[in-house]
Amino acid sequence: KAGVTQTPRYLIKTRGQQVTLSCSPISGHRSVSWYQQTPGQGLQFLFEYFSETQRNKGNFPGRFSGRQFSNSRSEMNVSTLELGDSALYLCASSLEGDEAFFGQGTRLTVV
Amino acid sequence: GESVGLHLPTLSVQEGDNSIINCAYSNSASDYFIWYKQESGKGPQFIIDIRSNMDKRQGQRVTVLLNKTVKHLSLQIAATQPGDSAVYFCAENYNAGNMLTFGGGTRLMVKP
Image 1: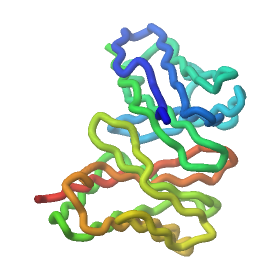
Image 2: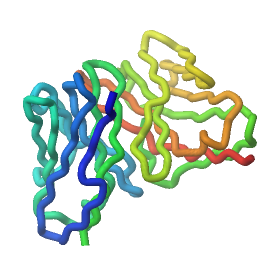
Image 3: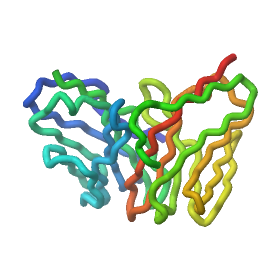
Image 4: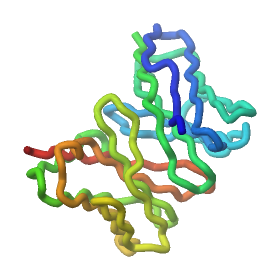
């Protein structure tokens, strides 16, 4: 079956702009989590959605937000982009209490 | 695992040798642990998991050991191959839902 699909793969934005990233989970998976990966901070949890509700939230500013649709697809949005938001954004999907499968990520560069 | 900030420790092994990658996790309430492999330009790939009611679990060429007393996790790779070269992360889950806390990662380099 198809894996986790993230789009776009690469993105370049200017400081102050906003960006929306998309994640399509594995079919049947209702939990979608988002992570930020940077060389300085490693892999950090952003938030998790389950059945269209945010279930867990990491320690990121309010500029980072997300949502989940009825088909379990999820989007995350970053507003007022800063240079420090440049990172690989990873999405993972899972069944309840089971291993999380990651997508290839979206590489965001803020200039 | 604690994020130890990204000076990645590196383990260099000869092809065919066994590899052991270690991880110290942070929360004694964690009840689910996963090892991931990440190759350059790719997302983390699931390798093996273990729940806190176990202390050992084996997969194909891989074994995970869990020591809850000292909050330590290890990944053993048998007969390491060049394709095993990657960064390996341990992750812990102590929350309801799927919120993983990742360790800083270890880079495994396999010499042919």
